[in-house]
Amino acid sequence: MKHSIIIVLALFLSTTLYAQFQISASGGYAIGSAGMKLGETQTASGTKNSYGSYGEGLNAQLRGTYFFNDKMGVDLSVGYLHGSDQTVSKVNLTGYEVDAIARARAFGAAASLVYKFNPNVYGRIGALVKLGGKTEAVVYQKATFSQAEADAIGVPLGSYSETNYVEDYHGQFPLGFIAAIGYEYPLNDNFSLFAEAEYYGISLKRKDSEITEFNTNVVLPDGTVAVQGLYSLDNLPEGTNRNTTYVDELPSDNTDTSKELAVKVPYSSFGINFGVIYKFKKSRS
Image (cartoon, rainbow, N blue to C red; front, side, top):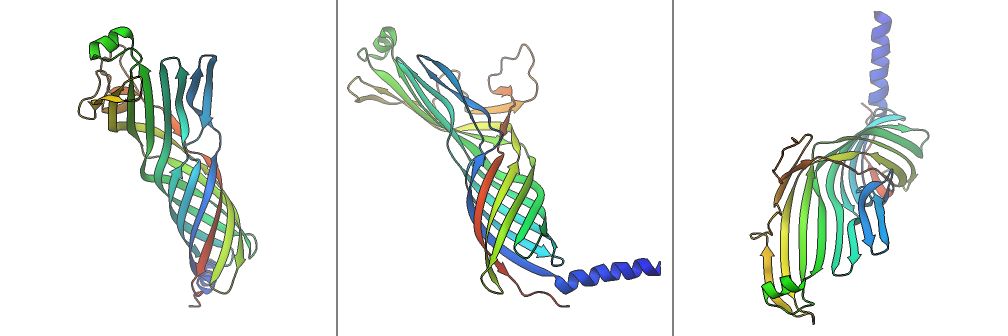
């Protein structure tokens, strides 16, 4: 018993003698890893898949790290992802065009263990969660009217509709994995610069979506807008739902078009971050 108490006291003293707190700020860019199918590109000659991850893009992080000794520490961070555009649908056919992209705008947090291999090289490993945000889809659609459609609207043949809308997708609470290895270059006793390679392993199951912007114009063959706002957010086309809920099961006789089967979308990525560290004075208590 006495030996156990001595060991515990020794460990406690070692942490208090070397305890140090530091904060850091960083920014970087990540590319998608384990890309999954996100959409399709279609032309008159055929169709091909589009692959990627919504984790690709610019990111910024704020981090606080507490070292128990000169090797081990814990790390808490919050970050923001400004995702790159990912192709969801691109169609270029006679009389019909679609250009639809989606991108992440997300806030996250992570808790990690930190280990210093030496005074310059360190590694991190831990858990990652999404705190908030959305996957934003931005869609453009152009459809040339048939003769019957043009006559019904009262415009000449060759006229077309132009539709622009934005739909925001939200996900369920996810839990992912984070790992990084980095190099720290001290400038003085308080400030250091660092660079690190970081991996995020996370996917997001969709919960719901909402159309937040919608507008359809009727355009003449010469490009003149004949009808402004034929359809709008308060007057959506028949069969278009402003809100959609994603579920795990649907009955075979389901007729509720506002419900769809849920899918998981990828946010995994590999990234490079650069930043600055400020170290507070070591505790000597």
